[in-house]
Image (cartoon, rainbow, N blue to C red; front, side):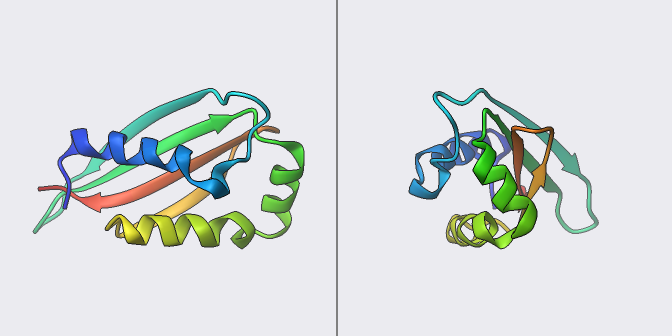
Length: 103
């Protein structure tokens, strides 16, 4: 379980992972979050949008989601997230999203 202010810091760690060498030059990144209220616990969804993703990475992602998704899922699980996904954006953008229960 996380406090919402912890999640952005944890997600910033993602940029240091070797499998995240997916951009051409310094990536432009932005964060966002949304809280989903639940009966027993609130869930928070935090996302990291990265642009300037290499064309070959986007092409590989489109043809084989798990080429990037596998490493991202392992990273997310090791950090205690309950779910994760990667969303495609425009021609050079990917969005990495994680879900966690809030404290």
